[in-house]
Length: 76
Image (cartoon, rainbow, N blue to C red; front, side, top):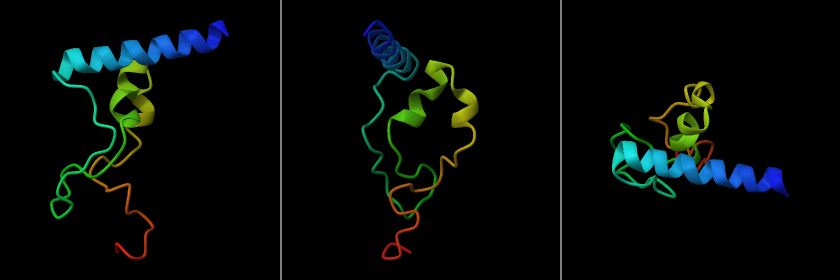
């Protein structure tokens, strides 16, 4: 139980550190215009990885890719 509580606390701190640095909380899902692949659709987790000491994981992902349509034959 204490491990779970600590993990949740760390996530909460990461969200607040993100907010302090960016003046907003991360979106639950990005919904930018998909015709310009500058910032594709993705979830909040990638945004807070650097704030939970997981920046190396975040650097492995293509931030310009639209994750919600990857592999979707209808969207391609």
